[in-house]
Image 1 (cartoon, one colour):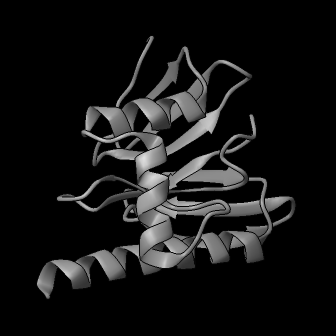
Image 2 (tube, rainbow, N blue to C red):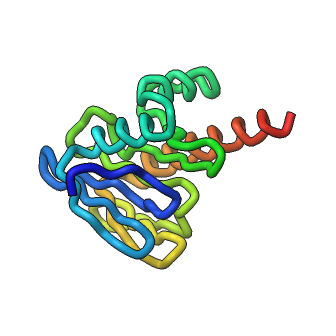
Length: 148
């Protein structure tokens, strides 16, 4: 598959080499012939913004510029957060609203998604929880703004 747009079924975007990405969806998995960062950029554009615009939006809402969570699509609360620096070739992206639970394991964090699929990410529990908190905070701020 040459290109991919993130959607509500997307659970995670995981680098698989320098120019390939494993996409985990609720019912399928794909290998895409582009980097994880390129998938993020294309998905933002697909929903009418640029990646840079989404980063600016996160900065305006939360003041976060390093490893910012990204709103891919507002109306369905599609928010993803990075496991490391977004420009790193090892950076994975995780869907906020599809996480059921998670736990520390040797060498990283195991995430159990809403459909009971599991994936392991080589990050510390503290880093993961910080990223999860930031994404949740972004979702909360945006929801409050819609209500006000």
